Image (tube, rainbow, N blue to C red):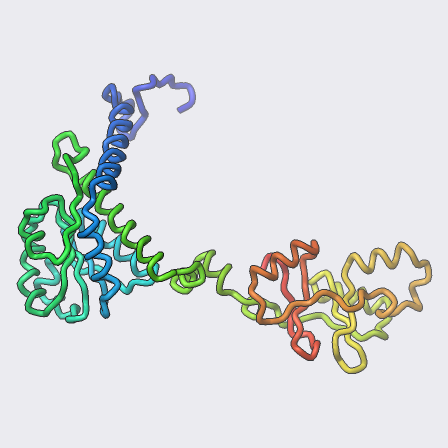
Amino acid sequence: MQGIKVADNQVVGSAGLVSLQPGLIDSVRSTLSEQADALHRLSSHLDSVQYQKALKLIVECKGHVILSGMGKSGHVGRKISATLASTGTPSFFIHPAEAFHGDLGMITPYDLLILISASGETDEILKLIPSLRQFGNRIIAITNHSESTLAKHADSTLELMMESESCPNNLAPTTSTTLTMAIGDALAVALIHQRKFLPTDFARYHPGGSLGRRLLTRVSDVMQANVPTITEDTQFRQVISAITCGCQGMVAVNDAQNQLAGIITDGDLRRYMEKNAQLDSACARDMMTRSPLTLPADMMITDAEMLMQKHRVSVLLVTDKEKNVAGLVRIFD
């Protein structure tokens, strides 16, 4: 705030000047270090047999991989489910309390459940187990206690190996949620390797994002159909008029068979005018670029962009197999 001197340990909030407790930045560093250490400990001591079982269960699952957890575990479960779904593993999240009151009908015997509970004793999670066993579902548990009730009823238990939460009261889910999230990411990445999931596969599940556009969009999807076109005999003034009215900085030139013979750009026009004093008798064939660079409609837009950048052009014509003009693409399309 201009004109007000604020000390390093003070901030201006809605209630006015607020003093921060000393050592808060040290607390931030300490929390980050604690969670980094917890991740390193998990990586160093994870039970490879249990992870092998878990991955095998997921790979062999013929239905959906369903995540469930209560509270903060539920929020993390939603993220894990979203990551799995976007990387080739059909998945969704189910709220344990809602499941116990009717949403169990969403689960089929072909589905695999990943149940999350740091304590392994979350009541809403444990209530699901009898029904899941009756349905014949397999269960993967993510918990911090390998001897918990949840772990005893699971087909595979992925233990957090957590000593304590970062919360000074050892209550708020902090380190446990970080570890659970990391386990979910680690499983998803392992499955990417197992399924040889490629960027093009990823793009199919992200068609609205920039990656989807880059990997799935073809020239035909973005090309403009209205192309200003003239014939080889078009006179100089009409060439200028066609370029101006077309608002594309160019005009396509067709031959007598109505096939592409050339292109005239603003640059072609200027270069011709610089070299020739007599313009009234000039026609399109005198100033056009013959056999211009063109694109097929089925070319990927990423390849089209690379081609345009390589040749330093902002507009390219799109032609069919008979060399008829089908449209045009601008580099920012």
